[in-house]
Each structure stands twice: as C-alpha cells, then as structure tokens.
Image 1 (tube, rainbow, N blue to C red):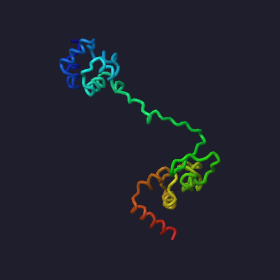
Image 2: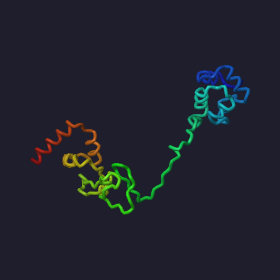
Image 3: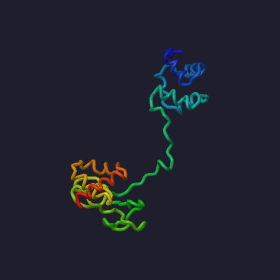
Image 4: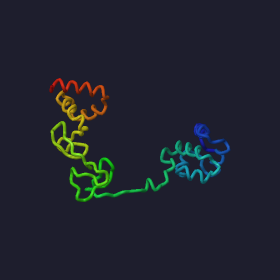
Length: 186
C-alpha cells in the first residue's frame, strides 16, 4: 500500500475499513492523487459497488473537493425554461402575462387589479410603474407609507435607506412617526 499513514488515517476516519483500503490498492488507487482519475462518487461506486454511498461521497469530497459531489439529475422542474420577449409584462398580483396592447395603468384581464401600479416617488416626485423610480432610482414605498418616507427624507435619511428603514419598522415605530408628521403638518 502506497497511501501515507496520514492518508490511511483520514480514509479510515471517512468510513473506509482496512479491507476497503486494500481493495482500493488492488484496483490501482494507491495515493490521494489517484482519486482525481476516478473523478466522482458514481465512478467510485462502480469500481467498488459494496462501498456505502455516504462513505464514498465523504472520501471523494476529501480527495478531489466539491467537484466530486454527485450532480443533481435534470428533472422536469429544473429543465423547464421559459423564454420571453423583452417587452413581456406580468401582473404584480397574479403573475399573468399581459396582452401585447397593454399600457401602464391598465387592469389585468385575469385578476382585475392594476397590473403595474403607478406609484409616486417620495424623493423626486416622479411617478411610474415598477419597484424603483425611473427618475432617481429610489425604491418605491407602499402608498400608505408615502408621507412617512417624505418625512424621513426631510429629516435627512439617505435615499437608499428610507424604504429599508420603513420595512424594518414595527407598527409602534410607524405610529410614532405618524404622530411627528401630524405635529409638523397639523
């Protein structure tokens, strides 16, 4: 056997027995570098069918790294590919594809809601569809939190932090912010 003492101890720790180490030597695997010729777990199991698959996976991962891990087989779920044109628009509520004559603000034929709600930007006051303002790049906030976002802007909060901050707030913090807003405007 040509495996070093350290390599033998590692292989035993991975789950191989002394008999299996001798079987490896008999098929020509005498050093860690020989596992790269085997390549993957499936091939190791083909040359040593009595080997436990979990042990084979541990041995191959140690010998050649993560590349030896078994590759997932293609299923209908992973092999499914949808190719759309660049102008395809989907409803933000029900994910139904909109007709070719769709215009921003139209109602979805499937669910009846506005497919791409037009929102106002708290930062630059532009409006448009989508999740981000096309004028300044700010992330849109829900309409119910628009005034809170404007208040945070006036208080000097950075544009990129306002939407994130509003999402992180609980209802008590939002109520506190609403009371400050009413004091300022009321």
